[in-house]
Amino acid sequence: MTTIPADLRPKAYASAELFLDMLYAIRQIADVDLESVAIYVCVGEATMRPVLNDAALVEQIANVDVAPEDARGSIAMLLVSDRLGLPRETVRRKVKQLITLGLLYEDANGRIRTTPNFADPRMKDAIGSIHEAVGRYHARLAKCGVES
Image 1 (cartoon, one colour):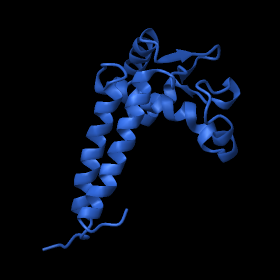
Image 2: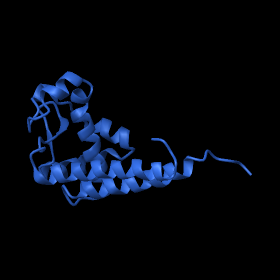
Image 3: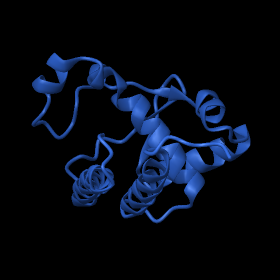
């Protein structure tokens, strides 16, 4: 019989719970299908990447609801398709739906960004729920004797 690391099973359980909690929280922003959630998160990460890579910028814009455009990243639909392993046509169609819902927009160069929506109460609630889920993840691991 093959042995596995003692922390593997608790990490798997806690990770599954965290993932489901995050999906639920994100779907509170807009009731969309799972592919659309994945696209929204992928575009959101790309939009926030320049800020997250610059600690001084994080501090500078910490309290503003809309980050300056030059501090926001973007992503091409083709790259979204590649990153998520989804067909290009699916990504194109779902991006258009997310644009119609006001969650994404396409810039003049055809690149996609999330709309600035941190002031939206649904966004604040979703982010708060995700933060709480991360806390539960760490607590679940600690309860199993796993350091996180």
